[in-house]
Structure formats: structure tokens, C-alpha cells
Length: 620
Image (cartoon, rainbow, N blue to C red; front, side, top):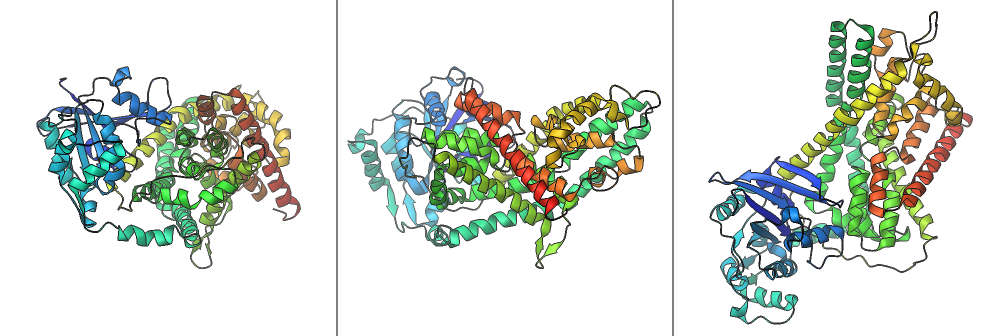
């Protein structure tokens, strides 16, 4: 056996496997893709009390080794030893939900049949006892022929039990063939026989879950509750984040001023202050809003509510040509369309999967949030409506709803072009409600912050410098009276594009910023910051920040332009990573081209309609 203990976590979805992984590894996690496929590979590390290092692999959840999706295929291939990089596993930890052994033990029997070293982790034992279930883990170990350890994934006591078992190397290959209880028939029949022998059900019902489901799964009250939850989230994104954003903005303002005083060379000063600091600071300021949004999504996921929302919306989504299974990938797309599109692998029907992929970019991802936050703060007053609602939060909620409604409408249109009109029933497990695991929520937020800041330090940093170069060179001729940017490469290109976008109310500065924003939507904010910093000659105006520059002075926008740009970003596919993921998942350039054309077409049409109505009928 190797010096570092290599273990892999195997289990059904909703068994608490990921929470267990988070508590074992903390922040010592790395996420990458398996070679040749788009399935994520999540690996962490920790040390046992003896000091021995452990490498732990968190495999995708599956109900069976008879795989029906790419995620399940990875789990199957690792268990069977078909993936070279993961062949040297010392043990497989089969994690099961103690309250749902009837469903979860089927997978355990399949892993046992492979003859691998196994340790059965009987998770959520506190919940089982609360329901009055008595599980004889010693008998269960005898019947299965493998060691069993009881845990509570969100409490240290259970983790300590597991770590002690690993330290003592209690895992082993199955020592019996279940012959001591004369088990026959299918795995389902074997599980039934085992449960009769090792489990006593005193109170089989989960009364807490039943009571909550009467509200959350009600056809009327459930939808109202879901709408209220989403509404509260978007109100909080603005209300809670404001003080943190002010601190970040003040810090970058101070940093730019301080560094600017040290650098005397004009071009270098412009590069560092206007290109690097202004570009990065203009995006980092929106980190609090993104983390607040993710906090709510993670809490809802940890609590067991999200599968119920999928079940609740199944009928509505089916009428639009989608499946209730599309809810989780579409919800993931609110964070980022890339993992959302990758999550469609759980949709077995190819027709439903393709439609979900095509509408996923319409969900309002976190990259849009900096753009929305900038424009809403600039053009929508921070006033209270009806005595308790924040108007800016209302507008943000409306933008999110516009994306959702547009996705349903597009899916409905696509439905009429489908040859296959068959129906597909939604079958999914609804886990018990549980208090969110705060450590898992914290790790999820930390991961999101790292990803966001990595983008700021990578692609946004690089594009800000590139844009600064295009906006700075060539230098203005002698006797030039216009701002330097008017004579630059970017200025020339912006003036060429401006007539095309004039019906949308976009000026040439916006046209310039739209080009680097193709790489990532949030780049628009830093690009506008660079363009406007180089477009004005008044240093006091620059110090006021981008929000002031686009609302006051000679280069200010009208409210109609601000609204038009907001609508443009509901639809426009400003994300090369998303388009690359669609190509990778579908294997079709035709699909990527079709998606790009329809999204840009919708963006232009809806922005044109917004600007023309706002100017002609409302005089904005």
C-alpha cells in the first residue's frame, strides 16, 4: 500500500457525500476535468490523527453502476478500474443515507460485487434516530461482509469515527457472499431481506418534511413561496452588498491615487492607473453581490429545497418544451452557463438536453451582475417603493425574470420544430429537509470568490491592458484638439461600428467596450472604465468614477441608452467559454453557430425595441 492513502467516495445523490468530503478536506480541494471528458474531477487531501496523508476523490453521485450519463460512467469506470489515473485506489468509501437504506444499499451491493476494499459509511445517523429508526450496524456489517462506520457528516463526532476507522485500516474486501442469510434474487430483493434483519422502524414518517412539503409542493402556495424566495434574494443582493462595495471602491480609489503619485512617466502612469487598477477595481467591486447571490443558492441546495423546486416547476416547464430535470442545470446557469450546460448531462433524453443547452445562456449568470449593478446604480434611483422595497432590487429582479421568461418562450418556439412529440415522466428523489451545512456553504463561497478573482487577475487584467494599448496608440498628432482616444485604433474602430448600433442608442465608446466583452461579459465594466478614463481631459471627472462619467458631462448617456444596454446583456452571448462548452457538449459547430445567431438577433431586436419606445413614446 502506498504511503499516501488513496480513497474514493461513492454514493447516491443526496447521501451527504459532498458534505462529508468538505468536512474531511476543508479548503484543500482541487477541481479539474477527467482527461478527454468534461466531467469534473474533485480531489482533496487531509491528514489522519496518526499523521498519515490521505488523498480523497469525490466521485459523481449515481444510483447504479449501470451508467446512463457521462457523470455516472465516470463513477462506474473508476470503480471498475478502467481509468488509468485512478486505478490505485486503496479503498472505496460507500456513503449511504441511513434514513433511505432501501434505495442506497442497491449501489453498495453492486460495488461489493466488484471485490474492492470497501468501508460502508452509514451517514445521517442523527436524522435516522430522530425518526425513531434503530439500525444494528454490527448486523449490517455481518450481512454485507464489510466494515460499517456510523457518521453525521456535519458534526465532528462522526468525522472522528471515520478517521479512526481509516487510521486502523478497517476497510477490506468483502469477506462473505451474503450466504449467512441465504440471500437470493435481485439486488432489490436482497436489500429487502437485509433491512428486515437489521432495521427496526418505530416511526417511518418524516413529519417535518411532510409538513413543509404541504407548503413547498402545493400547486399554488409552492409557486408563491418560490417567487418570494427569489424576490428576497435579489433585494438582498443590493441592500446587503452596498457597504462592502463602498469599502472596495474607496480602496481602489485610494490605490489608484497613491500609485499615480509615485509614477511620473505619463504613459506608464496611464497604463497602471487607467488600465490595470481602474480595470480590475471596476470589476472586483461587484464581488460582494456575487457572493450574496451564491450564498442563497448554496443554502437552498444544502437544505434539500432545489429538487422540490424542479418537481414544482415540471408542469410549467413541460408546457414550454422542457423537462423538470432542466431546472437544476438552468439554476446552475444563474451562477455560470458553463457548469449549467455541463449539468445537462443528467438529462437522459437528447431532445430535452439540446433545448436546455440552447436556452441556458438566457439565465442571468453572475458575469452579468457587474454590468447590471453598474447600470442600475447609475440610472435607477436608490429609493424605497411601497414603504419597504428597494427600487434597484426590483429592477434587478425584473431583469432576472426577463431572462427566465425569454428562455421559456424560446423553448416553446423550439417545441414546434421538434419531430419527437413524446412525453417523458419526471422521476427524481426528494431528499429530507435538513439544516444547511455551514462549512460546505463557506467552502462553496470561497471557491466562487477564487474563480471570480482568478478571472480578474487573468482574462480581465490581460484584456484591460490590451484595450488600454488600443485606446492609447497611435498618439494624437501635433495640434490635435480631441481627446487622445479619438485618434487611437480603438477610437477608429468604435466610430466605424457606431452607425450599426446607433438605432440601439449605443455611442462609439460602448461599441469599443462590446468587443473585449465577447471574452467575458463582466469585462464590459473594466473596458468602459478604461475607455472613459481616456476619453475625458478633466482629472476631477475621472476621479468620480465610471458611474458618474456615464451619467454626467458631455459623454453622458440617456436613460434610454442605459435601458437598451441592460436589455442587450439579457440576450447577447458575450462569453466565448460558453460557446466553447456548447461545442464540446454537443460536438456540433452548427449548434454553436445557430445559438450565436439567435442570441445576437434577439439582443439587437429587443434593444432596438427598448430604445425606440423609450425615446419616442416616453422621451427618455
